[in-house]
Image 1 (cartoon, helix red, strand yellow):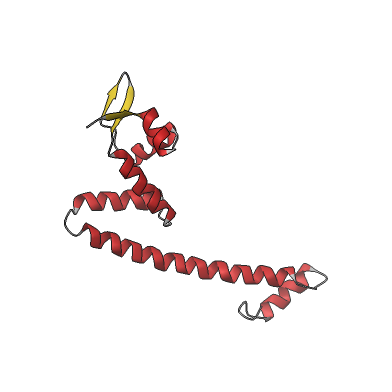
Image 2 (tube, helix red, strand yellow):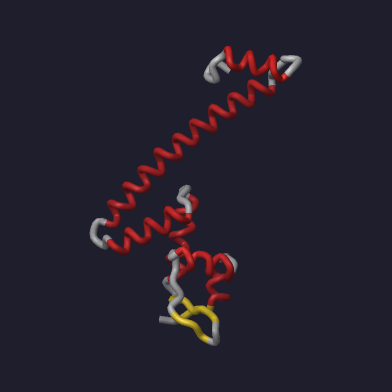
Length: 134
C-alpha cells in the first residue's frame, strides 16, 4: 500500500493541511507514520475523507461524524444498522430545522410587508396574530 504525504492528501482531497491535522486531532483520520517530519497517510484516507465529506453534506457535524466513526469501528457487525439509525435521527432533526426555517421565513415576510408606523406597533400586532396566520 502506497503512503501519501500530507501535501498529496491535501491536494487530492481539496483540504488544507491544517484541516487534515484538525481532522486527525478529532480522531476522524489517522496518520500512519512520519517521513522527514511530515505526516504520511495510507491511500485509504482518501476514502475516509470522502465519507466525512458525504456525512457533512448530509448535515452531520464533525463531532457527530467522529462518534459515528468510533461506533462503527467498535461494532463491525451491525454497523450498517447503526448508521441507518443515525441517518434517521438526522432526518428528523433536519425536518424540524426546516419547519423552524419555514416559520422564520413567514415571520420575515410578514415583517417585510408590515405597514405599521412604529416597531412597537408591529410587535403588538404580531403578538395578536399567530405566526401561522402571518
